[in-house]
Length: 125
Image 1 (cartoon, rainbow, N blue to C red):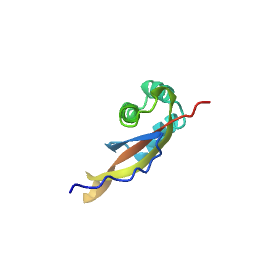
Image 2 (cartoon, rainbow, N blue to C red; image 1 turned 120 degrees about the vertical axis):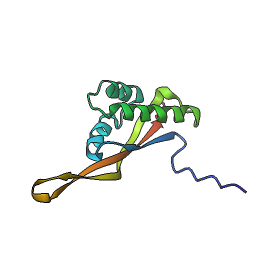
Image 3 (tube, rainbow, N blue to C red; image 1 turned 120 degrees about the horizontal axis):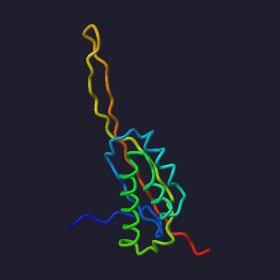
Image 4 (cartoon, rainbow, N blue to C red; image 1 turned 90 degrees about the vertical axis):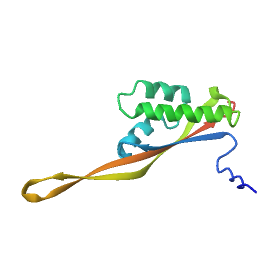
């Protein structure tokens, strides 16, 4: 009587992890996502480890989650994984106000972002 299982929208050689509510603008997060797209996962982890950007630690944790999903849930070989996709999207925006001169206010927007990381197992070359 339970809920029916969802149809898997990824291939059998792919695994995914989604990190939501990252407190950074999507534009800045996309700069970090560009660093890892298309790279082998070991190289992408090293790039994130030594990146000077603040959000790279959260992206690294998400990539490790995608690798763990591939290994534990889909029985993929970790040594042959590459970062197939790293897509960035908007999330909520906190709106704040700042007092300005002559009784006026200025709007401050504090955006949040989300990133979806898909890892794929490469075929034997």
